[in-house]
Image (tube, rainbow, N blue to C red):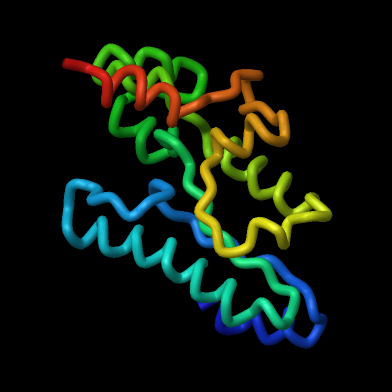
Length: 157
């Protein structure tokens, strides 16, 4: 809906940035048909918009956070932002989580990149962007869900 109203303004100004939030940066199955379909479609939407809006100098991207430490997740684990590490007692992977501010900082870094249009059509992750642009999460950490997932989930026997 935002793009429906925002893109015509960007076309008029001959520049702009559209970012779709997704889960993951590839077309892999995400454990549930409907969830997977929604997230893969978001990546495809960014790719298609990039092609359609190229002539107007509008950049379209999909951006994925890692394990998001949202208010809902804090509630599920019965913790707060102050004691969030306690959630790792229920799910050890929660220790690699990131706040919504981290993906927000990723988007802010993208918006301030004078060469952003070179990335148009891509699906990017907060952890890759953290490495590229050097920003950190609220607590000074630089969560890297991709590295954590590879080392602690994919490579487990």
